Length: 339
Image 1: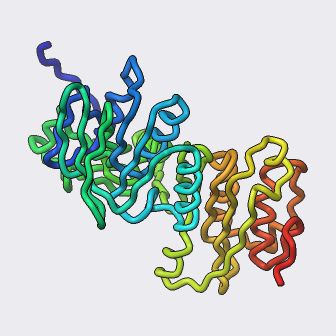
Image 2 (image 1 turned 180 degrees about the vertical axis):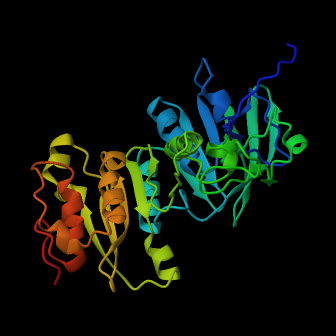
C-alpha cells in the first residue's frame, strides 16, 4: 500500500499481456476460465470446452486430453492453428481427432448457462446450433497487451489499441523510456520478448542495436509438435513468389521409427527464381528443436544445393530436414521415385 517514487535515467516497460475474452461471455474463474485460471486448478474437470483452436487452445487440448479429460475444441475459422501452413494444420487436426479430441471448426460460442454445476454452452456452426454440456469452458482466444496499472496518458507515451508504440530500438516516443514484449503488441512470443529486452538493454548501455523480427520460429507444443519459420506456401504465392516445395515424412526416418513417433512430415518452401529457402514447416517428433535449422537456413539465405554438401549424422531426426530439402528437386534418397 502507499505510493513510492523511483527515479531512473532509463525505464523499460514490460507488463506483458492478459488473456483475451469474448464480448457477452463472463469469465467467472470457476466455470468459465482463461489459461491463467487453468494453470491454478487443483482438480481436473471431467470435461472441458476449449474456445479457440489457436496455439493456446490446441496446446491445452493435448495436455488435458493426455490427463484423461474429455476435450472439445471449437474454432470460428475453417481450420485450427490458422496461421500455420494449411497442410500442417490439416494434419494436426487429423492427429488430434485420432487421439480422441473433438474438434469443430467454423463454430462459435453464442451463450453460456450454468445449471446444477454444469456448463451449458450454446454453439453455432454453419449447419446447426446445439448445446454442449461440460464441467468447464476455457476461453483460449489469444492474448492482448496489458496496460493495467500504467498511467500512460499522464506522460504522453504514444499507444495504439492498448499497445505501446516503439521503434526498432524498442524506444518509445519519450526519451529514456523503452517497452519490450507483449505490451508492444508485436509477435507475442517469449523468445521475441527476450530478444527485444536484449536490444533495449544494449541501447541503454550505449550500443546501437535494432530488433530483426523477419525470421522468428513459431513453436506449438502439441502431440505431435508443430514448428515453422518463414512463409507458408499460400503466403508465398500471395506475395508473388514462384515456388517449389519438398516434403519428407517421418515414417521414412529410421530414428523416428525407433522412437515410435512416425506421425508428420517436414515441408520446405523454395523461391524457384533465387533458389533460396523461404519457409520450413514441421509437424512431428521434436519439431520445436528441428526448426532452428530452418531459422539458420533463412538467415543465411541458404539454397538446396548447399544442403547437399552437409553431412548429417545417422540415425537422427535431423536427416528428415536434409531429405525434405533434397525433395525440392526430387532427389530425396529415402523416398521412392515419383513416376
